[in-house]
Image (cartoon, rainbow, N blue to C red; front, side):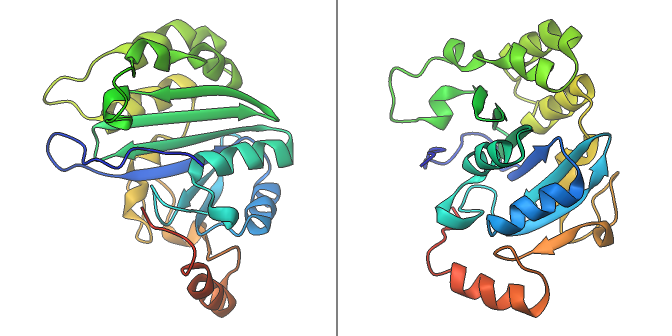
Length: 223
């Protein structure tokens, strides 16, 4: 089970959101997320990527109490493809996980002391492992140096992790509206309309999804 850290993130209140990016056909991604009883929104295909946005960024997002990074690993293995999980916490912490099929490639954390507040041995230099591999998985190996430098930077007082994530999206060809997915179920600024997303509740749509979500809420945590 993944642990994101339970202490409040220092600094001004900012956005918290998560997303799953999968390099596969949308129908295949939708089927995989249905099998995993995912709760959230599944967007349209965008330059080869399908973005799924969990209802609860830091909580259980699928069956077996899986969080977004656990789900990325499962979907990557299920579809034999690349899957990336993104978490932004209060705009002061950025986490990236990536898997290529059964192989975990990236486990990045922008500030290990924020992510693991009770671990005195958490060092930021250990958190860049696999970053160069992430550029290759995204189909932009030429961006590896720039990506590593970007993710190694410390944020200034007036900077946010959403700004850093936007720069990552530009380098790796990810949809730049990723930083605005917290607006769902309303329209995503700069992105698709809400009608372009499929709403899943515990892997189901419609009334059946509402009933399934009520049952799932008994065992799933939103944080």
